[in-house]
Length: 137
Image (cartoon, rainbow, N blue to C red):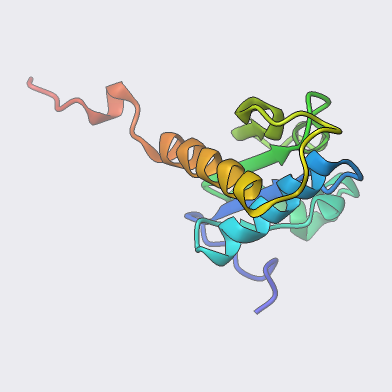
């Protein structure tokens, strides 16, 4: 099935930087690994930036959106925000201590970013304190 055909509201969409720098490639590989491990579905950032209606609709119906950027510029997060996509959870490869231009693309670096992304997703799925409190009225 084409990813844009399913509009299940419980889907997690994963967007990533695929920039030319080492940290962009690490972000890209981490997003692929998250998808393959079943933590969400990679989705087309170019389609969102190009304002493709089916892509925007899919984003609007998603339960969770994760943007993984390589560096502080945050191109993925910016593209999503400029397209009006709400509720963006964001992770920068630099947030886990990797430095642009000095971080070779290794399995260990990809794993480190993937683990940080899973933590972001777990935090995104946790109920807020208000919604988890029982009402005693």
